[in-house]
Amino acid sequence: MRGFEPLSSNGRRLNTSSGGFGQVSSKSGTVDLLREAGVAHRMDAEGLVHHGVEFLFEGQRVPLDLTALSGGKSVMVYGQTEVTRDLMAARADCGAPIVYGVSDVVVHDAKSDRPAITFVSGGETHRLSCDFIAGCDGFHGVSRQSIPRELLKEYESVWPFGWLGMLADTPPVNPELIYAHHERGFVLCSQRSLTRSRYYLQVPLSDKVEQWSDERFWEELKNRLPDELSKKLVIGHSLEKSIAPVAQLRGGADAVRQAFPRRGCGISCRNRGERLNLRRLRRQLFVAILREYYHHGRDDLLASYSRFALDRVWKGERFSWFMTRLLHDFPQQSEF
Image (cartoon, rainbow, N blue to C red; front, side, top):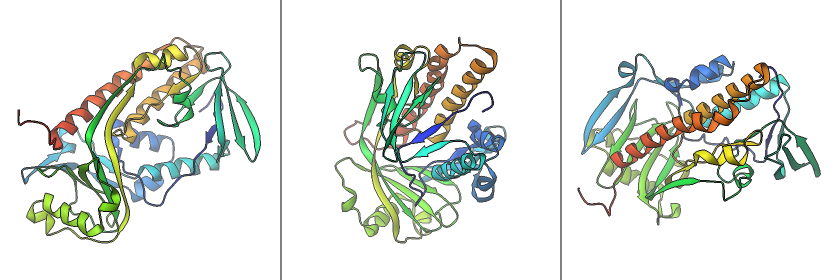
C-alpha cells in the first residue's frame, strides 16, 4: 500500500498439503481484488469457475443458476491455502518484510497512540513500534486475548453436531457443488479440482474421527445421496479426515472501539462457519480507512470501522444461520 509500510509477522507455518476448504467468490469481489493486486495468475489458470449450485431435499435435486440470478456473477473454486501461497510469494517478490516462526508475541500499550509488539525470533527478542496493529491471527491469537475481558462482547451459537470432512484424489461426483438435506444429516459435495474432491457429513459432536474408516465414510455418503449420484461416486483413499464443530462466534460491536479507540488493534474474531470472502471484506475496509488516514489526514473513520464492518458481518451471520437451519438435521427438534 502506498503511503505507509506494513510489516507482517506470523508465528505459524503454513500447512499446504491438502488445501483448506473455501471458495474465492467473484460475487463478493474477492476475485476482482486479487486480480487488481496482480496475484491472480495462478488462480485464473488453476481455479474452477462455477455458475451454479445444487440443493437436495428429500432426494429431489434443485439446481440453482447463480449466474442468471446474480446478473452474470460466478464463483471461483480455489483453495484458501492456495490464495495464501500466492500472497506470500507476491510479498517475497516485492521485498516487503515478513517474519515467520516467531514466538512469545505480546501486544503492548494498545490504547495508546504508539502501540507496540514484542516477539522472539531467532532466539532474540524484538520490539516493533507501530501506528496500527491489525489483529488477523484468529480466535486463539494474541490480538483477541489483548482485549480486556470486561470490554469484549461475544455472541456465540453452538450447534449440536459437527462436520466430518474427507479429502480424496477422486473426481467430483457432480460438476457443481451439492448441498443436501437428509434425514441422516447434512451433506456437502465439494471439490478442489477436477481430480480432487472434498466431502462433508453431519455427525454427532460425540463422534471421533478414528471411528470413521474410509469405507464407513463412503458408505454413509452413498446412503445420503440419491441413487443417480451414489452410482457415479468414485471412492478412494482419504488424504485427510477431520471433524470440525459447527458454531458461529462474533465479537460485539463495541469491543474493538472501546478497547482501542484510536490506534491499537482491529480484531478479526473467529467464526467457524465463516469463509474467505467475509474476511476479505473486513480487511479491505480497514485498508481503505488507513489510506484515508495517511493520505488525507482523516481520523474520523477509524472509530467507525466496527460499525461499518459489523453491519456486513451480521448479514453474513444471518445467512449462515439460515442455511444451517435449512440444511441440517436437528434430532431434538420437533417437526414444528
